[in-house]
Image 1 (cartoon, rainbow, N blue to C red):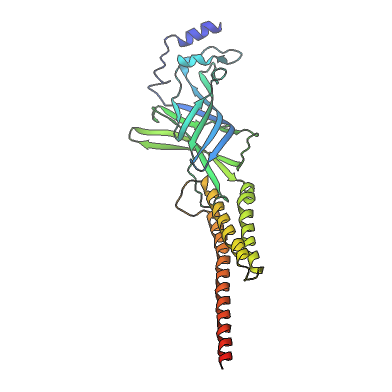
Image 2 (cartoon, rainbow, N blue to C red):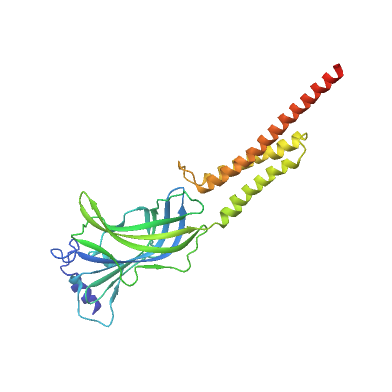
Length: 313
């Protein structure tokens, strides 16, 4: 009888103590199934993941006689048994899905192995190097750790057969999720050593948007400024408008709009080098007209003086 079995398993069970409290640490296996990457923000230096978060550990206090299948029970039993106090070390915010009911399940095998699965959405810190933007790729990590239990009590391991699963339906507007890797490390703090797992996700930026909205317009503005070289130097309004005010203001607006959605960083980005080079070429067209206009005035003045002298003689 399943009811009697559950009552027997929880009778005298103290959820305040971890399994095998005076013995070896509990090994917790972790599996991530990534459902979506909803946003990657350069301005906020973060990214948002939605995923199934599964933890597996053995609690011998929950062993029972072998049945045909494992116990699949309500997540309300989480209130009566011990489970790891796992948190995301680099998270800015996290949401647990609870519509239409709590998105969690609990399964217990007769050997005492417990599987806990949660559906979560986490926004985590992603330290980005934008030196090669937009020709860059970024590595964003999600880090898992116990909040209270040191390595003497809990050791985290990636599941040996399927640590990370990624949905084939993931599509990002500006990135391609090209690879991932798993790491495990030890974190030393003032309260002891803690086991930490990290999942690194490699995001390669797609160039299409930036080619259409930045590189092609900037190149066309430079070409437009060169058209003034074929306009007669005496057509001052046309050359000033085409090679001067219009192109310079357009380039300044393009540079400003490109950097509006990016963090205010002190180093040059790849796109900055390109746009500044375009701006210099546009500005050089103005200098060219200024020099031509000055030299033309100088030549006309010299000819006028020569003519005056010849007439005086």
